[in-house]
Length: 247
Image (cartoon, rainbow, N blue to C red; front, top):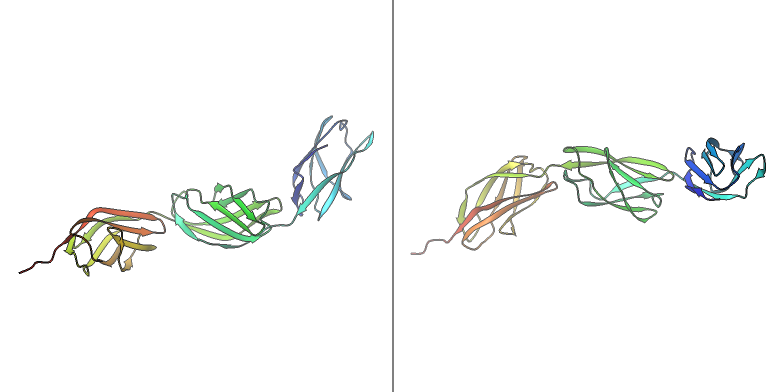
């Protein structure tokens, strides 16, 4: 006589289905010594809502014909979330983050705001999950659902991808050392600025302005890329290295 699910919250309230034969007219379903609320009943099925409890208990069904053989039901304590290894990322989602806490081994869902993701259970204390796309930039609550209940208390910030609209100046010596002002949007969380893939020192002045100092480069037009928590933006051929004059 299978029972599904065979585990649930210590607080009770889990919808449980018990299947077997000769179950019509069930008068009682016991989880250990506690009675469950019967919600549906056919000759081959009894639907119940589990009472509160702890540990492993025997589940039995009683009808006019007697009491069934016992089945095991496992009570699971509520989960707890302690940390999210990355608290921000692109609004488009797709990045993987790690959640840590306790009681996570039965996790089935992680919510980022209203957006659902299915986690990978690493251990009872660790989950990894691919962040779903967000509806808009901004902070959302993060929660995890397990057989033992729901845990929250953490937040995650969706960040829009940056844009690059202008570089001033647009050229300089191939020896580098030129201060270049870059304007655009979404620069608050800038992680790197590169000229032809080479990292450049930079300073963020505002969400729309940053200043970078060009590294040395080969003569010619090169791509300039600004990478933030929200993603990357590239000015293709946006800066031109020129050779210094010789006399």
